[in-house]
Length: 151
Picture 1 (spheres, one colour):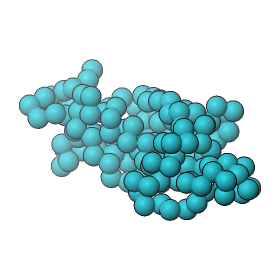
Picture 2 (spheres, one colour):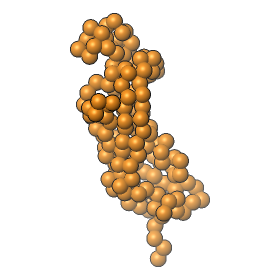
Picture 3 (spheres, rainbow, N blue to C red):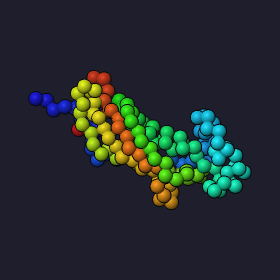
Picture 4 (cartoon, helix red, strand yellow):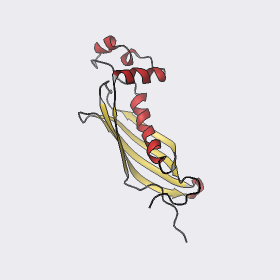
C-alpha cells in the first residue's frame, strides 16, 4: 500500500521579523477601522501609560497568522481553520517583532486531502519580551496534480 503524501513536517519552524514604524501603525489601524487614538495621535499616546503610539492588536495578530499562509503557499495550498492568539503586551511603534511558529503535529486527513496541522507560536520584541502567544490548526493540501510535495 502506498504511503499517504506528506506536506508538512512535524517540528518544522517558520520565523519572520516584522519592523514596525509609526506610519505602519497608523495606516494599519486606519485600514481595519480601529480608530483608538492610541494608534493615531502621537501626543495623546505620549500621555498614556505606554508613552507613545501602540499597534492595534489586529496588526501583529494579522501578520502572525498570515505568515503561515505565505510560508506554506510556496509549495502547497494552506487553509487556516482555527487560531487562538493571546495579546500579552502592547506592541509599540518602533518595535521589531520576531514571529515564530513550530509545527507541533501534522497528520494526513484523507477526507480533506491534506495534512491537518497544529502549530504553537510566539512573538517577541527586540528586547526579548513576549508580546503574543498563539496556537493554530491549519489544513495544508498538496497543489493540484501533486501527490507528494515534500520528502
